[in-house]
Image 1: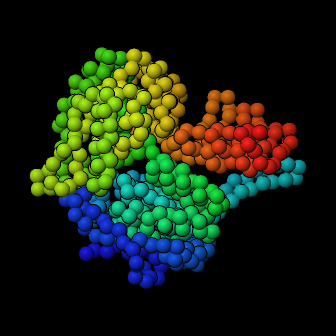
Image 2: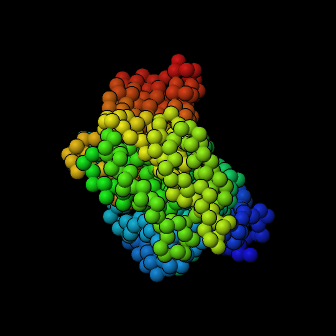
Length: 521
């Protein structure tokens, strides 16, 4: 049976003790196994990174950029191989796999211009006889913990900028589909990257904890579920690391009465069901404004969904393939039943879908609900499958209220022919990004990320207050920093929206209290 080992400078090392099965989503069988590493495996990778990174950091940015140019060429030359490798383990169709890799290449293309980005800044006369200048310097060794749903794009998103700016980077991909990150690391070496700068280690929670605890890893980037994002953020920050942790999403698409419904339907069928709905940028909640808008939309949307073709990953005519594992199939179908039990009207039921010749594959047909309400758990939680819900509202203000009350806030979309109104409405939506007449997307040239449970980062208010830190159940919990509208700052521990534990409170006038807090006192 095919075995996927760690990609570490000097070789994979000793024979692994633990393995994880890599399933074939198209037929339900085991197709390979992946070595599951531990702290000792990580230590070998870290030591190799520490040995290689100083020389790479002193390599001028132009030479580092040339490696990126050659890497881009090699990935493009091997696109078919990479796409088939990705589809075989993940289940998405070849076209989606190529799109997965291409979106990662967009970041690599951005990194080809890194010499310009790396320029510092200079301020003459910052003070009496004082000039100030800044330099951009690498931080050392970083690590990325990446999800199963985009095994090409997200590792490239993380490692590309880190490597181009002079850092070493260790990728810990999902154990469900680890082959593509390994192949990408191999292509980096072929492109001229020194050994030890890009490495891949495999594992489960044991490896994740080792990464979060290792003192030589300065920064960690994570993409995955919100609960695990919270865990990663908390443990990484406690270890003194810079942590970027992106969680789940439940994006809303608001459809105005004057929207081009043909465009809306075309966008929604791709956004809700592409890649079997296994992406944080999906649009699973459709919010038409007005009963007439809803009826006209459903009249076009239902036939379009029914026309979607579900097939094996290599089926060139299929719109999407299976979900990634049998466990995930069971979970998604469980949420469908929950929505039924909660009173949702099941218009199209994708459960029980069987593909001839692939009866054991992890296939779920497209599923559509109507009359979904905000009090349903099936609405509140991220389903991460080919399931969409229609929530009709009487006014656009109610549509915005629903989107803003969601515990997730990665992205949102508005479809309308009135662009001026769309721009005004977009400013009212609390989300990391709002798209007009488009599905939720990302661009390497622009910021990307969410608020609330979609990203462990920032949330701001109209009065100028800003919180940055950790969340649990939509409340401040863990470590965070609150900047009050009046300029006062609290930086420390939180419990259920209150300062609780050790923290530092700095008043605008310079007064400071440092010590322990209990329920904001």
